[in-house]
Length: 95
Image (tube, rainbow, N blue to C red; front, side, top):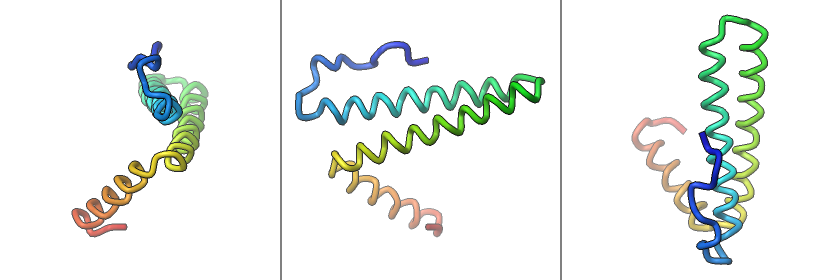
């Protein structure tokens, strides 16, 4: 689990700092989704399972919020995301 920054933000160039902060936020949220879904799969208590899955769903929203902000700030990420969508479409035949 992410309990500290996996990179030293003090060493990140000023112009890249906000993008890296957003990426770290995404990493933390992905980690949380994984944890809550794993815990939900293990519990036999239906109320605990329901709450854990609801929280995991909220974390997915947070991931998208960070991603939306990142895509507003990182045009290279926008281009690479588009290339990835095209490649997946080509490989799977699905949109």
